[in-house]
Image (cartoon, one colour):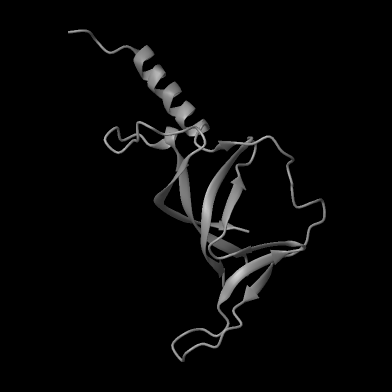
Length: 141
């Protein structure tokens, strides 16, 4: 029975790094598409009438200068230091009560390369397709 070598471990590590590196969508664009000015984020509140159980000032969007995003919008979030962007759909906005930091709760999409389960992986996937995942997390605006 052959003994496992360190080369096979190194190959596994290299493969894992490749998967982690190629998870996002490659992008060739500027570092800051919103411009050089640093505008503060502003909340956009619901103007609809609400019942007693609902918050009348529900946050439905955020605005920075001329840029605006709302709950339900799909966004590209750039990974720092790379030319990759992650695709997510905004599910909610929230504000940290301690420091007032504004953030959005995203549900993520993944590329075909990120799906590792061979039974669930599509055999007819196209290079430009992305798939919605059950992965959620909060990211600062």
